[in-house]
Amino acid sequence: MCTGAQTATDRWSFCFDPQHNLLTSVFSISTGYGAQFENFKNFGKKQVPRKIVYQPESGTTIEATITQLDELRQPDEQRFAVEQSTPPQDRINRVRIDEDTLRKLSLTSTEIDWSAAGVNSATGGCAVYVCVDRSGHIREVWPGGCDDAGLEDPLRDIVRKWQLKTAAVNGVPVQVESRLTFNFGTKAK
Image (cartoon, rainbow, N blue to C red):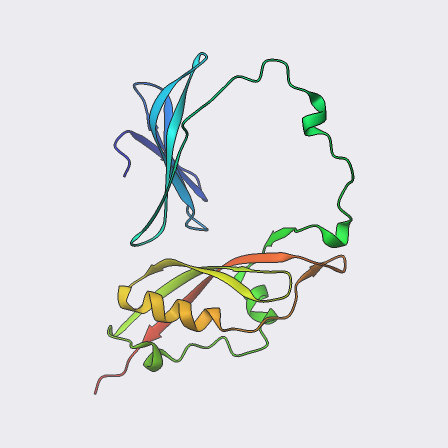
């Protein structure tokens, strides 16, 4: 929750503590990913958050606590040297694609059987954010908002079962990610 100054672009929302000039949270409007930054402490002449909190879905909280920060005064450049570059066909590249492109990769229907999902509301919409691996398997389905919260988990389970063609860039398989939207409706009985 933003308690300080907030600003947003067409894709990002930022929250600042104006008294200390600190970024306290960031949120991607298009993907739903975001993080809160807490427990700021001095590190040199800067304030650095020692706790990073991420809530990918309702009921799930991931916290990273930084217990030690040390200045690297004379770094050994060999620590950062790349001995052998990974060949392009073995690299894991991620590409953000639009909803229509992802649906065209599907080998199965992308229509949702809302009766199987347990629709409770008369009409509305849901969104999910999906990550697909280089072989076309959906690996992650995160909620992106739903007018009927009871549909989030069934929708995620349905989408997770989709079969997709492998996406490729210049003939090399890539991971893809996309935000998908769905409308639902029921007929009056």
